[in-house]
Image (cartoon, rainbow, N blue to C red; front, side, top):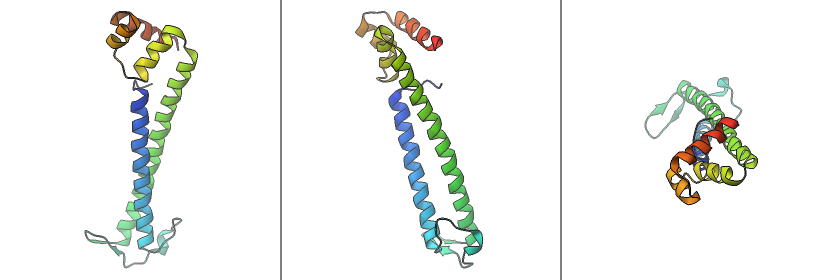
Length: 140
């Protein structure tokens, strides 16, 4: 598992989901401009193309951009799934732990506290916190 905090993972998931929504909107716009439903086929394209704000887009360019969008959406969904599985791992770990181990793991992974801050809060040295955290991670 990549070592990221809970909030970092949630933020990254939100960024990917926002990008997916943007790409879907762009795809919908492209298909609407050429008068196609979302289940398009290449032979339905009018050979005239469409005019964008920058320049004239040929049908081939539209078709390629829609394919690129589909590929990007697929890749972003893959990343979202990976990040969500990492969130799930953090949650599962938290459910397994209790006491001091829970506090250390929670403060480090969810609250983004350093070992020094955690040690001060729990009355331990940063080295002790680091050792306990390493045991937690290695045991599971």
